Amino acid sequence: QVQLVESGGGLVQAGGSLRLSCAASGRLFLLDVMAWHRQAPGKQRELVADIRRGGSTNYAASVKGRFTISRDNAKNTVYLQMNSLQPEDTAVYYCMREQPGGSTYWGQGTQVTVSS
Image (cartoon, rainbow, N blue to C red; front, side, top):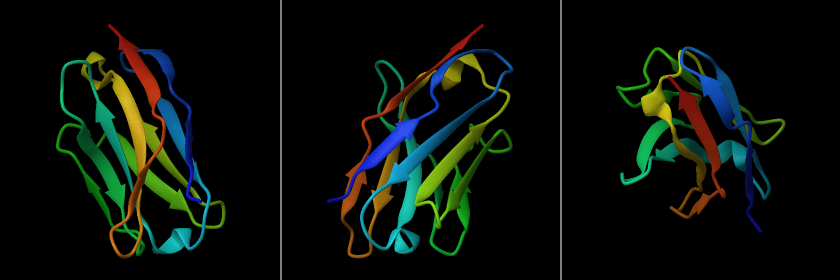
C-alpha cells in the first residue's frame, strides 16, 4: 500500500521560510518521480516542483530561485524548502508520487499560509 504523509506547513510572515516533508511508504521509492503541487482557494491545482529518479528538477516559474525540491532515497522522503515566501504562496500543498507505469498517488495536503 502506497501512502504519502506530508508535514511542515504552517503560518509564516512574508519573507519567511518553511520546509515541507513528504514521507512515502511502499516499494522502490528511488524509481519514482516525486512532486509538490499546490492549490489556492478558487484556483486550480498547479505543479510547484518535481524531482526525477536521477535527481533532475523542474520548477514553476513563480517559485524558481526561491523554492528547492530534494529527495532522500534512504529515508523515502522528499522535501520542499521554501524561502522568501509571499502571500501569493498561500495554498494547500500536496505531495505526489508517480511510479513507473504511470500510477500516481497523492498525500492529504498541508496548509501553508503567508501573512503580509
